[in-house]
Image 1 (cartoon, one colour):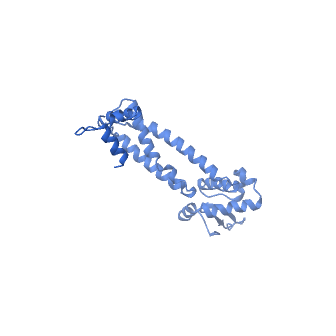
Image 2 (cartoon, helix red, strand yellow):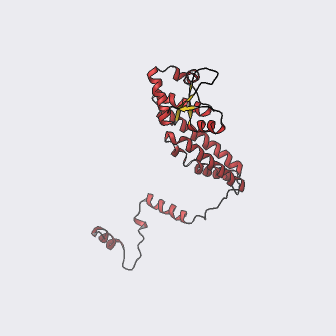
Image 3 (tube, one colour):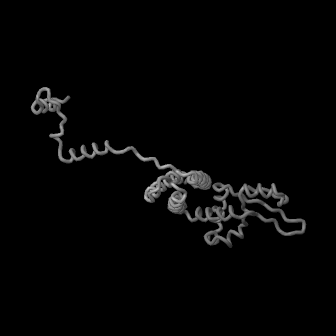
Length: 227
């Protein structure tokens, strides 16, 4: 114990007296002590459970989050969705208490989830745009989304017609954008050979998944993967 504190106690505390030190506290410290004492007297927290329907809806939210995280892995943004389910649970609890409900009903959770999902995805989209500040990368990402929605992929001609930003790139930048599709988005150029009736060979950019689906359905003849 420091000598100054020992001398202070000797001067102010009588022998045998229990010193709590309150008389020597500042007014701010006394107020904090009073608040702490009141806090210690608080009632035990009330448990507010989720209804069975809300529990099932939480499972659906979890599946949606997993699917979206898989889609965002290529942008390295999956972590932005890690806590959105938890946040929705917390907000739904606030909504339930505001409605004076003794449990979280599905309508409370639905409202909370719509709110969280909207603003979370707004943040994700804004981040994607900022990360893709390079116009070539932005164009390639936009093309990838179009190709992923197309069952049979897209030709370069179709990309030029559908995507304004790709149409305005120089030939060199177009090649870089197409290379980005292959290296980042796992989208490859696939050669559709000319039919026996004639015509030219066609190169379509498509996802590996779409190519495999076409092969398995037997709807494509003699394709050579150029990737």
